[in-house]
Length: 210
Image (cartoon, rainbow, N blue to C red; front, side, top):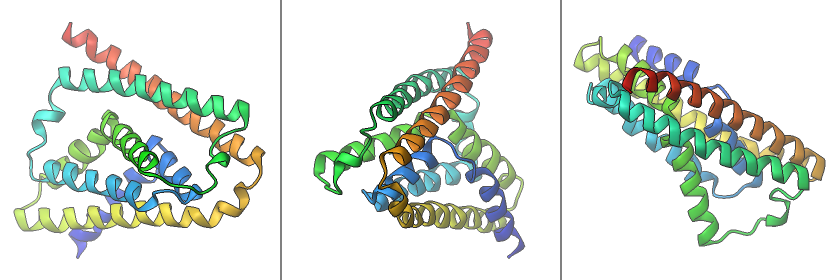
């Protein structure tokens, strides 16, 4: 049980920061649009990446400077694009107030693609799951690794689904255009901030590769 709780606490310390993934999940939760699928994709990616990390199969990813360089570059470009759209929505005051709660296959597909992009194009996700969680879990025996992994995944499950569905309780506060403009502005700032850190990370890696 101690190992399980250790995995839970380690994952909690890494997952609570408001990054691109959590910002998007929060927004979808407030909109009550495709919350289950967005939360499920976030959790499923954690399952795959943490399992690879803890079982030692993710070392190739974490130790490949060229892969990390390309990932950081593409991730930064994507986040700049997404952040710019958030700023434009904030300026125009349009956001998803126009969605009217309607859903469609196209909108679900878009939500899925954005979730995958925000998750898999962000090197910080690999650092947290493969390198940090995997590095700590890699020092344990096989039985302890399983307990540690289950603890980390339990935290991931509770966080993503908890945040996603709890955010829906805030929907009443987002009936005003000004509130959405504030959220879009904060989202844009977060995306730009992470993009800047990824560009710096890519520049640093580029200096060692080229």
